[in-house]
Image (cartoon, rainbow, N blue to C red):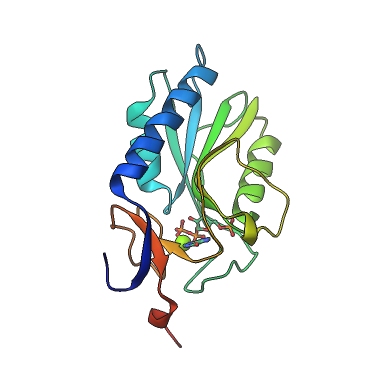
Length: 180
Ligand SMILES: O=P(O)(O)OC[C@H]1O[C@H](OP(=O)(O)OP(=O)(O)O)[C@H](O)[C@@H]1O
Ligand code: HPA
Ligand SMILES: [Mg+2]
């Protein structure tokens, strides 16, 4: 385990197993459709790629980069688009692919935006859900795991851009917070 973590929540194997289960569910629900999977950079990189590899339906992928955390551990509430989709959302069945739903600010913003652009349907898949963090009303349609009210990192998820490379997900030890 990385020395800056307090505990491991989900091992590489736990994640692989759950991603496969989610891919089966998604493939069944989107049978005969050609969904646009929208990965939200950067936290969802590993999840988006691993999920795509296991889908048994035709799917396309595109990415949006949105950010609201900076170097802190709580959402600023202000969501900024750093990179927009290259694909037209209009008329598409969109599956937003996220790593974590915490306050809900990011997903509420992205979901509303894609609906506004005329998507036929917009659903959310998130590997993690932290219900205790919620500040706005939004739910995922597919959730991998629920997590406690702790700051988690690994498998794409960062604290101040660190720990994304870890193949497992754990609880960040806040003794290692960067103080400025
Ligand atoms: O529900 P919320 O409180 O909005 O938090 C969830 C979002 O915050 C994190 O992204 P961040 O803005 O840190 O950017 P990153 O994905 O590049 O790390 C995470 O990857 C989610 O996208
Ligand atoms: O628990 C978290 N960890 C890392 N990034 C996050 N963004 C929202 N919640 C979290
Ligand atoms: Mg982040």
